[in-house]
Amino acid sequence: MSSLSKRFASALIILLGLALVPLFLLPLRADLVEPCASPDALLATSQIRESVPSGQREGTTAFQWSEGTVANPLHADYPLQFQIIRSYEGRRLYERPVSVTPIKIQPESHVIEQVETARGSIPVHFVVDGTTRPIGMAGYLVVDGLEPVRSPVLRQLWRGLPRLLTGRPPITLMIVSGSVSPRNQPVLEERMQSWLVDAWEYFDRVCRVPAAGN
Image 1 (cartoon, rainbow, N blue to C red):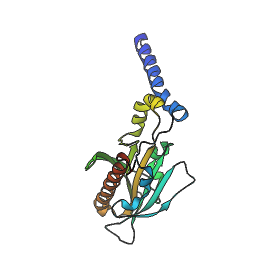
Image 2 (image 1 turned 180 degrees about the vertical axis):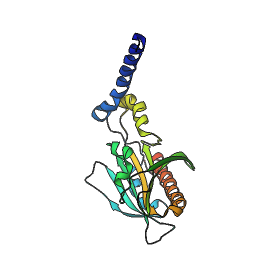
Image 3 (image 1 turned 60 degrees about the vertical axis):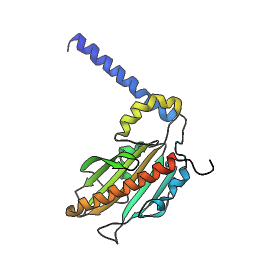
Image 4 (image 1 turned 120 degrees about the vertical axis):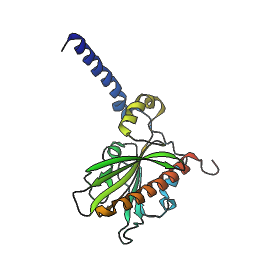
């Protein structure tokens, strides 16, 4: 390696290190901020079409954790399971979102589809575990603050330094999961996408519009 190449590599390592500094400082130094206008309304998951709430969890790193079921168009007796989780310690949520699903999913494939909604375009993730029969699958959406994000890690890197000054918003994970035969996978994927669109539109509506009287 030439001396010029060595100098370039050294400079690149230093710049990368400096870029990562805010990512490590953010959990330690940034104030926590709540950008949602009506965060308590997010617990009313019955307002999301065809959702049946089953309760909330406490004692986790999440400050809001709601879960329930969604009607399964293929098998009424086997509804899909959903979770809406909000946390300021959101690394687990965006690095391994399927770790929160009731069924065990070892993703073999992962695709992202940009989906149009009444409240903007969102990146919907789909993961499939084909090692079991029926196959396990999940669809999910990650929201950083109030913005749906395709790559939460890149978002954290990009916004790390400004957030040391403006504060750190929570990560919200909306996820729905279930099992299906391979030939019916498209049907279940469509149902999951529909629920995620409804969940996002409800989230965006209650978070961006202040509650009455405020």
